[in-house]
Length: 406
Image (tube, rainbow, N blue to C red; front, side, top):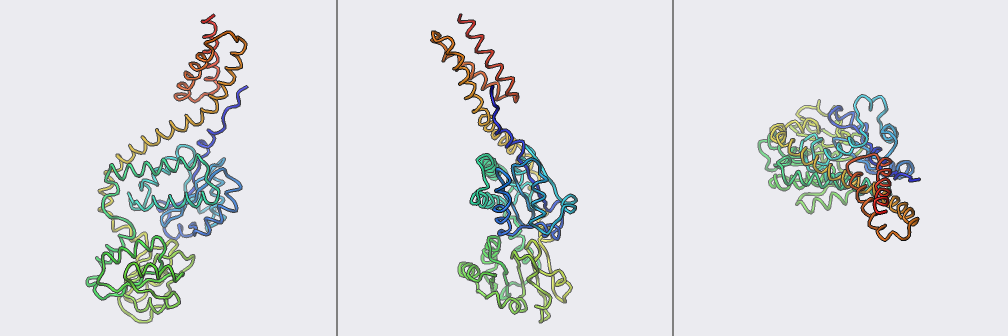
């Protein structure tokens, strides 16, 4: 009796559960966000024990868990355990997919089609990092790694063959555009960047490139990170212990830190003057009540994204082309998957046909007949899903060849 390959369950049970900007504002997303150390803890303590493979993707616009499991509800439960969100809130604002729909969702995320700024190419690096963390923690099997590679491949094709990512448009660049719009004379202004992680590095380099005449000051909870970025961007390093003093003196403040509570408070603003604050953090790191202070203009990441409407409109026209590339790559992936999942069955059938051929040791064409029967089966399996029926078909084909030769 043939025991059918169980690999096909990896496809059927590929699940995603997440929450993003489409149905939730920044405050809700903040409650479901995962800091890097929380993601690692989740992978190490729960996911590695429960699922064959899993990946956590947490950015300013989304928190998603991809995993191979019986139902997305298992991923939703973990998300609620490791964040400040709850199940009723997730049901209202979240989403989940399973099987091919989940894989297609990953492809769209990787292409920037599901980003708040359509075509935002920064998501590609974020997926690569999420996959790397998953693999380092032993939570990435061959199937999921291959699916992710196909998603990255599709994203690169879209970037090369469409204008979906045309122009320099990202949240970090949007901050530059807002400063240009809001501040008439930038020369001599003190710009304070709080948070010099990976996203903060993009912001810091943009500040150096676009505002060389401004006075740049960088700070971070880990002083060395701020020192390194300040040195590379011709900026001044300031210790994190001096945060309140530096905030009070600054004209423009950009916050891209990842604290789970407010780090910029109303009490820091002693001197009354016009200030522009851009909070790029999720969850928000600037106390919203700061907006009520005289002369202070505060924008969060959702409000910042709205300035890019014109560019987004141009990119919308490229979406059909991008979806065609995704469909083509998905087809390639499914071809690979069918070949991979059919290989064990084909090997088992070949073994059993060889056992049958031993009943007639004088048949010198047995190997040729087996090869033709298995090759015919491989073609049928490529086009049809019913392995049991196709096995019977292969066996029938072989027996017919024996009868014909006799």
